[in-house]
Length: 610
Figure (spheres, rainbow, N blue to C red):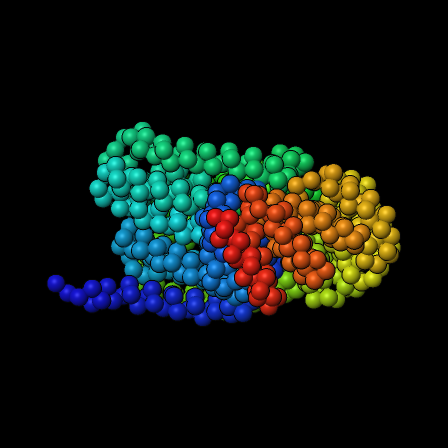
């Protein structure tokens, strides 16, 4: 028997080449920053994951629908990254690249084992690994859910291939488990059971050996799982107000046709890319939309026509058309018309059509040369697109250049970049441009007020916050920030207290509100009340760091005045459900302050409370 490396030389060399080029293309992300869109929501401002992988965090991951989706595996992967890299953005980026490479290997193995063509499989894998449209999924930390779910979807394909070799209950259970893990990373893969039915036609050729109903019946658990996740995701998105129900169905259908064609065009001509494509809404071209729907229908008819002579064309086109259905915009999620990341899995379908077509043509011997040209071309364009994800500024500027100056999300991104770099005057300019284009964009309204405050335009900031409160009288953060301005800059305690009390009435269990109310008690020289509200904040959220920092400062200050305050503090915390966590966190906070005596004291109290 020949050694493994000798019998699989072409496979190993081609995979090594693809991996090497992909690493070269994506290596710069190791030094990239977080970006403004979703990275703050998922990582930077998500204190649930800031302790890394903990039991509390693990439980939270399984009960959270933050961002409108249930994807516990994605949260857990972010927690692991925090444990390894803390808030070093480059490490989080690099994890995405590693998962992307594993996914590429799985895809190569799947097509190598089903098509038995090394160079065709290499071309499909290279297209997946290096196409510029896939940069968004890989280089955007918040799209961890995309790379992870597709990696597990590719593993599902491999496990299904394994199942078709020997149809046992155990192997079918492994397929179900892999599919479930994929959905637990991102629910977009709900179309996978249908795709497996199509793969039964080609390349598995199981339709010829089994009745259609038997093939569908074995996948019923997969369909039930997919429908469950689809329903849960829809209602979660509705709850988070991510579903746009204002746009009439006819416009959504027209846009779906246009987007199908635009994705195809960008697959072959990957230019004018943007992280955000503004939706044309009612101004959409009806004629162009109808033509695109016709083209999409024509593409499906090509698939049907070729199902006997060229079954790979049938599978490839259906793969592309149907795996895009959840994100094509018929159910409009978000404000974008389309997104590059949505092609991450569906594009493989068109790669099947193109490269299997070449593999069955007269130019088949030239495929290795075509593969090399493809890799070089993609590497050049993709490396350039990767550089766009360096920070919020580079990302937003490309979007403004490649879409239009009316791209309000891009203006908002530039404003966020300038704000985070303390250039508040430029930030204010771009927040105002954002609101000129989208007057009701609440994030921009709030951040404009915040930037005005930081730029010492306190009166203008208060007016902006009051404008927010006219639209949303129950906006807790607006009340808190107005209160902070009155306390810290205008020194009107009564006005500040008025807003703090309103915030406390609206959200009595908010750790942010309780902590700010405790701060106010310190200013009113009432340390006992401050201690009470800090402990309430910690009880509401045992991971809320700001409460611990402020409480530790209060303890140091009051302990110097009265030895009884420390005993009072312990009595206030002892008996609460979070007492052990609280004592330990206070110990860590005092270590950071180099108050080692107090750190030891609270560590001992933590052991006593266990």
